[in-house]
Image (cartoon, rainbow, N blue to C red; front, side):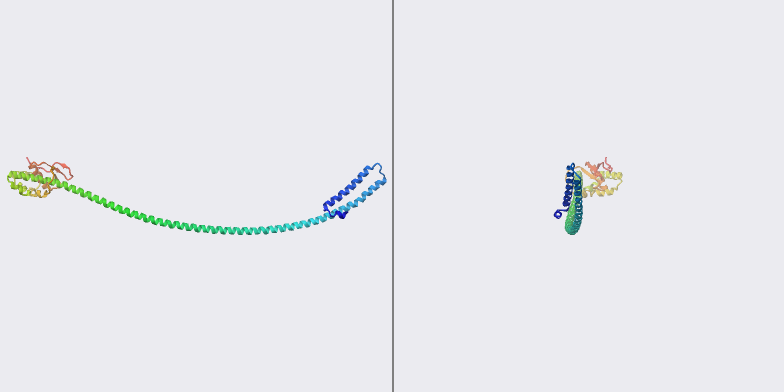
Length: 315
């Protein structure tokens, strides 16, 4: 029976044996209780003997359980050793796998770093090339801009030179126009004087009753005026008042016509301009015009009409 029980697991077999023993004891005590009234010394002895007979069985069961427990502990130790061995193997495998993964991860990181470095180098090379292209374009633009600025400056300089030339030309033209205008005005004044001298010649001719005087040069006619006694008296007094040499004035009288020998035009009032004549000529003209009653005006060097600056000895 015990050998058949050994086929069961040790824990279940031990529990089963203990339960069996306890059931036997319980049955003995129950039987003793039920038969208590009819119990005699023989039955009591029988019960005690039965109990004493059970004790070796319990002892055997305990020994068997201890043996089984020892075997179980040995097997458990073996299992623990196997588990430790398996755990160690798993740990070694895990460490080897982890080392392998770390190696692969390291290689992968190195590959990524290499690729990243290569990519950075490519980007730097492209960026450097792009910067060089931009610098080259910027240099070209600067050269073109410089050339364009130089062209503009040259054109501007040329334009300024042309403007300066035009300004100079306008200035020269304005000055020339002013001088021509002044010359025309002067000629007009001188021609008016010449016309007055012609009138004087006609007056002298009419007094002399000689028509041939009209064919003689005005200079000759004016020279005869210097021999007129009355005019000569006025001439002497005028020269004394103005403190000038009478001979010099007489000499210039014959040359008045030559000075004013220009083309006659216009009938404006006679003007004696200070800048057109010498002092002696101004005195001679003033005296002649006054002597013959020819109205005239006098203009000073500032081109202002003023009173005749010299004293005339008439009436």
